[in-house]
Image (tube, rainbow, N blue to C red; front, top):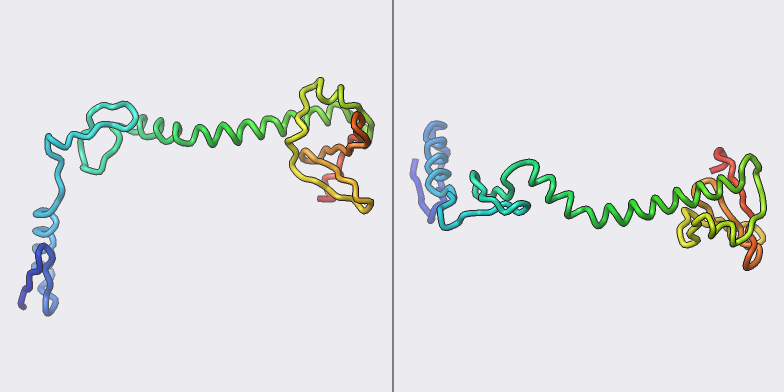
Length: 159
């Protein structure tokens, strides 16, 4: 067996005995293993405390890691949460106005007075006559004119 050295990587012309391979592997790993020196003191990304342990460690504990990652996603999560809350509120308003009926008319003041936000809807249905129904889940509305709307409920099984 002949060992050829090329920097820190060792090549073999033929496979060595398994114990020799393990010995060379351990030498390679432990000779070149990065260690954290006192000049490379790392600080936790979440709280700023000193981090002890592996060189690639970024947080002092699980709480800091979770807190940091939750803060990164907070803006995106809040954006989606706000839209979902608006959609739920729109659905609830349409449900309250419609009651037990399948179709009813209402005016703009009644919808806006309850806090309905027209820019949030889940889908748009274009009927055969070319009229657009705006739906918040299974409840929808059709603008009749500027101030009047037709409120409808889609049958759940017809989706």
